[in-house]
Image (tube, rainbow, N blue to C red; front, side):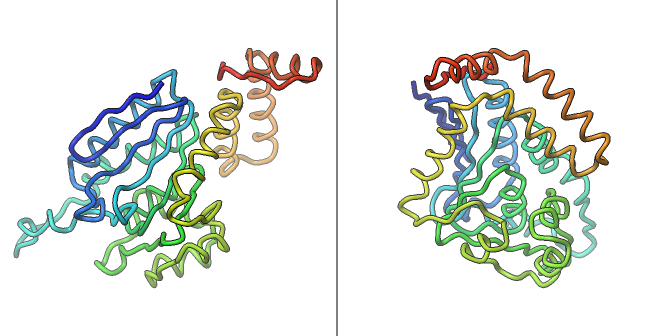
Length: 268
């Protein structure tokens, strides 16, 4: 069954337990304005709560993933005497999006179809996996306007590429093309533009057929491992394994193995 809803700035389609959220402001390279961040936040919340959705894909329409904050919206504000309150803006608009992606137990895949810059880059990095078109690129453009990387980039980037490379990318604003992103570990795979949708759907479809509770617990453990010591992580694993062992999917997996058949997981 396929369902689709259209909003002004975000398109949402759900099929085969995969919810695809498409940023839809192609005329401005899917730059973020208030409407887009609001609709994206709402779409993520709905997908997280929808029991039929097991995997979420975020992508962009047109030739960009997202170019980041729409600076065109700032023209009327940046006049002599104006003092921006950017921290409040992050707490209200961007931080809830990044937090939801990282904390939800459903896997989130970024299908990066073009440039991912600024907050658009941060959005892609916050996802659990990134599949990139050969025309994709990543750039932390914040330094070019005298700002620091936000929307989680200072958290996710060093964990993906290491501290030294993260410092370079953040402070030199160097553009990373798709192949370099693959070498650095920023993306999981690179495919041609024509193959991006199919490649993403293949990965999303595989995840959707796997035990959803186990995937969610694994995502939580991987996040916790960034802060836990070994003893705390071992205990967290034991607690999560106790939980996973009580799921119907675990019973189905073991039963299918013993019966020498393919398991049919229900995500429960």
